[in-house]
Image (tube, rainbow, N blue to C red; front, top):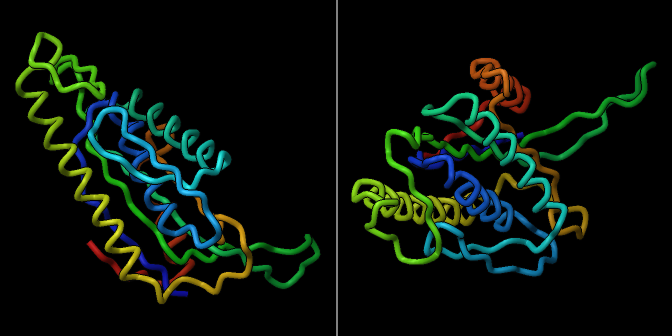
Length: 218
């Protein structure tokens, strides 16, 4: 099976922005791959002047938030470094039965790589962003305000990158066989809490090898 992959533009963030950024990106990807009947739900970003769409499904929101919490936990233990979150869509196939029962195989058909460079907030001043206009007072230096504006612009670029990819890459999507909101299961991978960065990338590589050589779109 052909597995398409998309490497999203790297974003420069501080820890307080991670949840908002990942929610925005993950929900946008899933919404554009939700092939069932959905009830679109517009959501405003907490830290940015951006609006994105969710599928309006509680279980999906819960799963995404749990994985975001895992990534934030990893960041807290490994500050000021780059991290990657991988969202993978797959279908399940039953292999031939054995003495130990039926063997389930996951066939990955699409993977999205979200790349974040998490900055140490101590070196960039303390900033607590809200929906209100960014203040130039003591809680937000000119440098942090400029960085935040650049991040908002970059996040917008990432959303357009997602939309373009989802619109252009469709031939590899398997045949839909149910009417659920998300017609195919998905998983979200984050770096391990033990900082086994190499091990995590090796695990992703292993899954890719199991599904053949994917084609890359930057």
